[in-house]
Length: 336
Ligand code: GLA
Image (cartoon, rainbow, N blue to C red; front, side, top):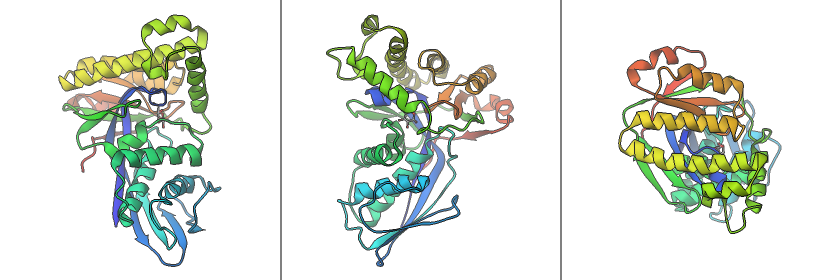
């Protein structure tokens, strides 16, 4: 059997998911595909079109290994270990076109595609939100990134043509149809690596700031008045989170009204906040956002930052000069 899961861009709500905030990702037409087959020799075999060497391990409850890409898959296998009898072994053949290190969530797409494959192959009946949460646990444990739920949820819950509004605290979510627009992804050429970047440091800084806000269970609950209780770096981080959550609410309403100009302004404000308050951008990303602004409704870095890509929304007829730039590709909301 075959399964697949898309990559994503994030239109608004950056670095808010692990603080119990709001996000608005859009699944794209680049995906990971997995072909799965049962075996009866007690071997788990992982084959990836982009990796020379296959990984073969005995079919037991896996722990993290030394091959990085395989760890994402083994993390998913560990999540399924108690849901199905996997001891006979299986083969997963993985291929896809989500670029790695571009901030388009190649790892969540890989994990959700594998989770869907195992879910089908063994008839586990795991629901999409549970699948996303299983993949999140797998990424945290096996890849060591203390990420939030956005990427896994985007890969597991998105429906064609729609962005996904998700409240990471309550898990409430709804699709929001994207008005007619080109979605442009511009790679900065700076490859990011979540595990090695400042990502976990930001997660820890937010936890530190939360500890100074008695009565708040997560930063997602914070309101502008809370900012007065903080100073310096912690105040900047929380100010980003509080204002970014407000931008997601406003942006969702703007999309629902088909107001891409208003939405674009929120994207630009989000990027400025990620650059100045959250400090996760880099000069290459800032330059790209500035470069596309004359043509676009709006643009911002997408994903964790520290390199990776910029996402821009632009009227389709205006995107040619942008798409002519190096390392740029245009994607569409994914189709089923
Ligand atoms: C990465 C993480 C997500 C999210 C974004 C930043 O993509 O995997 O959980 O935190 O960064 O918005």
